[in-house]
Length: 74
Image (cartoon, one colour):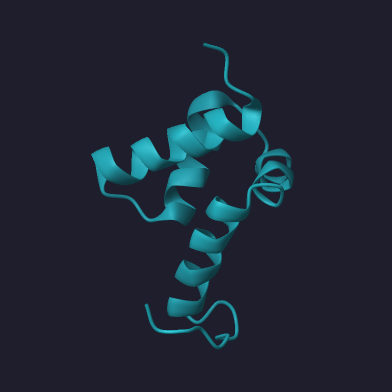
């Protein structure tokens, strides 16, 4: 089964997070390094992937890289 680049990126990032216990930001950078991709290229793909984008945003907010947004408790 062939996956689109967004689905493959999401799958590989999730795999790196789970197997190597990395943060999402570290997993994206690791993915870029392992596959020889430019971070800006992968960033343009991440912006089109709402699930991964949200996970990165939450992580960035927790690290105070982004201003915290209001969220409903789940």
